Length: 427
Image 1: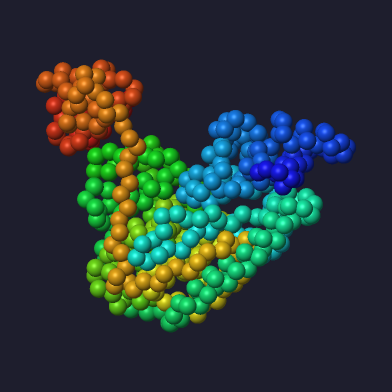
Image 2: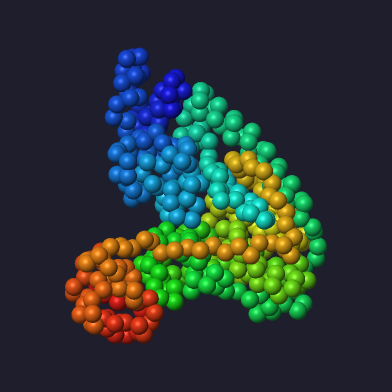
């Protein structure tokens, strides 16, 4: 920020973070306050107050509440991470600040949205999502720059809501047809790119808050996951998380997939071409949802329901699926509550016959590739010295070389893999 606008905004941030009301300062004092030792970081909306420290020196435990960024690209403390990285909201596992919680009976659903996909080439970037306006966040004076920004958000919101409703109304409304459905008709969790990670594991790797180690046969360990549906978290292998078809297979069948060939059903069931077709969520929330549509089930976390509605419409548009009348009514009612929805263009519709068979390949974090003697043994990851026979053991390795993956189980010249699981030297 610069100029008069920057001074006004920084003054708003300072006053919002202060617990006591101070006397009106002189012009000289005001200038000092906005340029030196700010108590709250101006990159984030307030409340809550994010301490103004060196970049990266604040984490979510220091704040204690969910946070919102003025500009999703300016996040000095990296608080916006995980599933919705870049959407302008951080510390999603923390509660809302009391000042940002309303007491109305209507569910509060407007927080985060994502862009709808293009059918032939889904977008690489999901633009920033919905965040409450400054006046609402701070509870402060509605005059000045904060009020101007709120007016702009409201104006953009009306257009975006209308655009999303238009995409909803463009979907064909037809009765559902369940007869003949069998889950096995959808060949799901295939390894389309041959990297030993099927579609389920590709999603778990891609959506991890902390990227897991990827072992032989794509076994996962050391990861951390956040469930967008209910806020549940898991650390370890991801075994307590399911990968949900956002539009369930049975719902897709009811809505038109009964007329598809087996190849189209397989591509729908493993659709990595649009990032929200498949979503890593807690097993409990996925079981609760089952094969329900939005007329029957919505995420328990009300703050993601606008995102859910938009993603649902995007998937149905992408695969030219229909909706029933109850589904239409529920989505209309939900979208009407999505104040602050970011404006965006409508997605390009695609025929499921030509829908892309795109797959996303996610690799493990880079490992050390420099050997102790300048050469690497071809049987192991990361680089281990290429010694004759079984001359090396785990005690010879540095911490940066552990854990070790055996590239091919059974091919273990150093005899490190005693239990034949492909992962060795883990401690």
